[in-house]
Image (cartoon, rainbow, N blue to C red; front, side, top):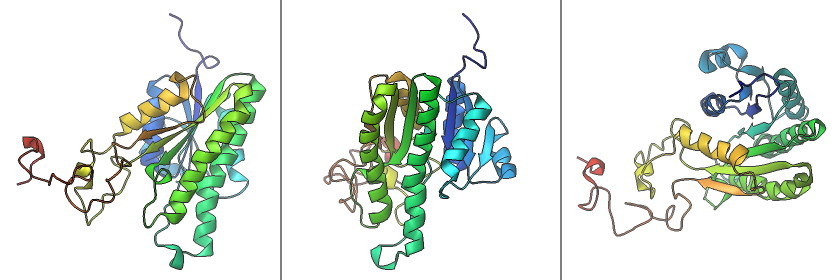
Length: 272
């Protein structure tokens, strides 16, 4: 079995402002044999402390108009090419329509939507120029799949990415470039635990949060294993978006006849 060289080793670019998220994804890609470059908002000292200096790193504010494309180009140049782009950047503006400012709207659009498209544009052009198959994965969330009361801005932009992915899949397919989305739910170590409902994850059909390993597996699946999939959205939300989940104010959202701590619960799930 031949060892990979820098020329044959696959290259991945991972972007996003949450170091816990991009670091977890980068780690799994590295374990799968990729050379990885990371684009993030944190300064280089913080990134080195949290990522361990294991990856090429570029600090970048992806909400700025010229930054996303240039950052991807710089990362690809450092790696010697790009086979996989994973975009994760996003901000969740607090509040509803009546008190959301124009600045908050613009920033959310620029970071949560425009930056994804500009990064995809840069990566796709590099893949096409190299005359090699490539893959792009947008990491989105369950908010793009159904409506919640306070996510009119964040959720609509997530849904827009899902819709854009479908059109981009048709545009890029002739060049052997695939593009897909992974819509995650409650992510361990990343998604904040709601103070008013700390046991929310137990209400999910799978009764726990998603691990970084599981998210990484989904990205790898769409990124390189699912060679016949493009323009799709893979849900990894533990059943969160199934009918009944957000509506039930008590017990298990997917079964209103059960309450937390009932006799039907497994012993390890019962409350004191």
